[in-house]
Length: 345
Ligand code: NDP
Ligand code: PYC
Image 1: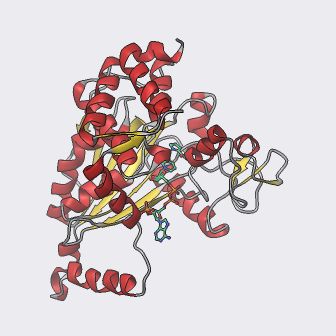
Image 2: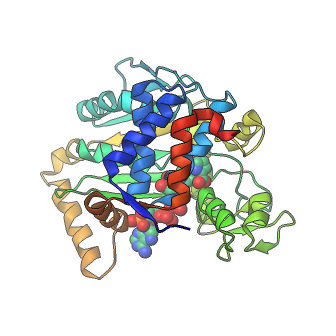
């Protein structure tokens, strides 16, 4: 196979945007979906980078996502703002409602964005980083599909249910963590399957409930939560807050609706935005400066902060471009030329 080639971030973004426009997305939606995918590739988060394009095209081809959906914001002037994605991708809905969410959080101290009826496939750090740029702390979460057994159980029930947190910092990068509540994201197991490599021990059990390192057996069995009962409880919280509480699908219902894990999940998402200045106002202290003391002390021990690897990868990608294999470049070219027809060609 030919050596990997590096392509500039802006060039990849333009190409991926074109692919989604060719597949029927409105320009605004294509830009939002391409933006989060290319950001994943740029930051070396392969499990939610360009490998996701094919999955997005498959749901489009199956008619399970509305390509030209226009997000509709419902804002009654209260703390909870809703945006109806109309069966479209979640990313355009977030982009459409971000300014309203940030303004409300600054006005009343704490605001929530409910994204309804969306196709959600992406990493969550993108959203909390955007809100940190607006000076806000935030939490983002969503269910996914029933891939994960609850601690003590053996059958898939919970989703990989990611949760992300962002905190604004004075420098160029916020404090951000973002992880699946399963030991690893499903996408990581899929990448191992494609590469023909075993998954680490402790990620999954097979159909009979036995530990496995075979990605195929793991995908057919159940994934495990991180931190045993602790991750299981946090995952359950995500189902309750971002599924049951919103009146949107939990992971089991999302899976029943799509009829299988071959297509990406459709459900809701919840984003909480908090204005540190409002919370600290009467204390007379500066919450951002207080936060800096902690984050600096963590670094002073030689520990790395979450997202530090990602930010370092981003700097390299922005300077040198993004390395892509010959197979990845060929697939991008096929998608760009053929659109959805590339799936069957
Ligand atoms: P990882 O385990 O790769 O990373 C989790 C977080 O921990 C990151 O913020 C990472 O920062 C940080 N981290 C990793 N190692 C260290 C360390 N040694 N010290 C300090 N921090 C560290 O994430 P997952 O595989 O669990 O999830 C990957 C992505 O999948 C997430 O972006 C998530 O949103 C997405 N996802 C989306 C789903 C959906 O339904 N839409 C479902 C499940 C997952 P860094 O990146 O810098 O390494
Ligand atoms: O990687 O677990 C995952 C995932 C599920 C839906 C989107 N990503």
